Amino acid sequence: MSDTQNTHHQGFFSRLFKRNSEPSSTIELEQVIHEASENEVIDEDTEGMLHGIFDINRLRISDVMIPTSDIVTINASATIEEAALIISQYGHSRYPVIGPDKDHVIGILLAKDLIPYATGLKNLDDGIKSLLRPTLIVPESKRVNSMLKEFQQKRFHLAIVVDEFGSVSGLVTIEDILEIIVGDIDDEYDTEEECISIKKGKDGKYTVLGVTGLDEFDEFFDTELSDIAEVDTVAGLVTHVLGRFPQVKECIDIGDFQFKVLECTNRQVHLLEVKKITKA
Image 1: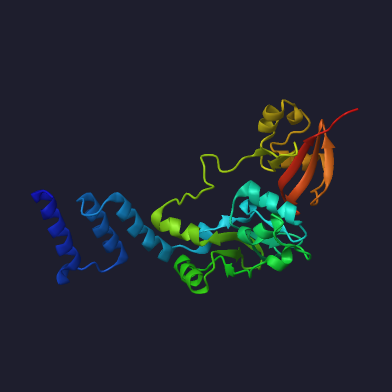
Image 2: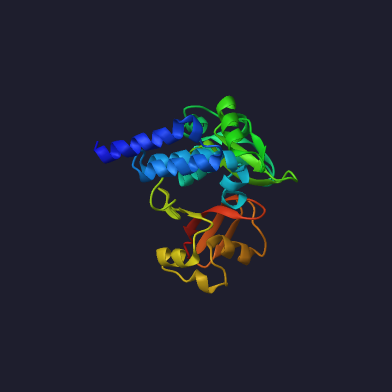
């Protein structure tokens, strides 16, 4: 360490710990931390983490939650195969299981709990409901630091967020909170592409995300479904042709394809199974 760096270090710690110049507010403490980074007492990553600690004391759950529109759910009536297909498509470890819609979360399904049944090692006679874990429900106004403590105390990793009227407005995970401090956390499922929009199965059928753009669909299948209606996504096309929001397991033929809804709510189509129609 150079003499200049030693001087900077000594000056920083003197300012931080000297009785007459102790920071008297969070703002002053943050300024001292920033000065420490500029003087290379700490690196930028450390500065970012320290500021993140301040942030979790200021922010509310509504500031960090995943909005309802982006939540991947599994319907309570889904079969083991349907649930496994959704888990395979999205790669998350936990999924809210819903009744009629996303405002009726009846439990949380852990992907690892489904594995023995999806692989045939165990039999499941009464559906996925028997596998559900309890749901932690929290208000939008809850402080992030308080949420982190509750996650630690109750050993939960996910909570459903509701607004003042009791409607589901989002979802928050312990990872979302930790990322405020340490930055983005990549797991084994994270790639440059968030998820695969169109995936071919072994049976020749395809699973397609509802948010897949029609232009992408047309390019992939060499078709022109985007000419049918002025919509942007596969989900929008299915809803347009039906004239209403579909239900799970509902099928519809469009062009040379049959679309089967695998996962949806009364407001959004999340996942479909697509197969080419064999014409006589």
